[in-house]
Length: 81
Image (cartoon, rainbow, N blue to C red; front, side, top):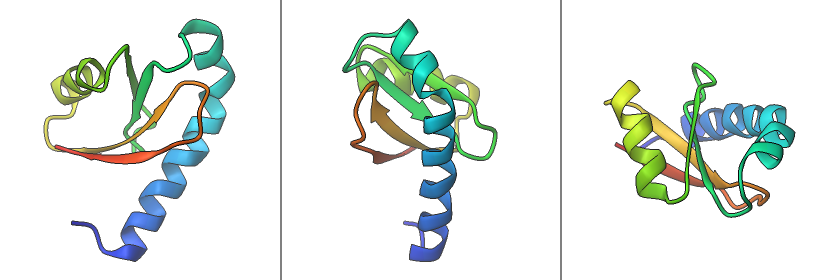
């Protein structure tokens, strides 16, 4: 579990990254596809489901946490490995 201050920094970095790539995501992927963002690197992984995106993310970053959203929506949630 992250401490509140660390979580706030984590989520702020992820939101910033999401807004940087939002238009690219909306052009390339369908509304409702899931995007997981690794905030430190800025890398992101997209899948039709959370599981699909998670498998891609876990392959590259097996011990990291991800911030998730659906393409075209602002509903974020924390994904922990």
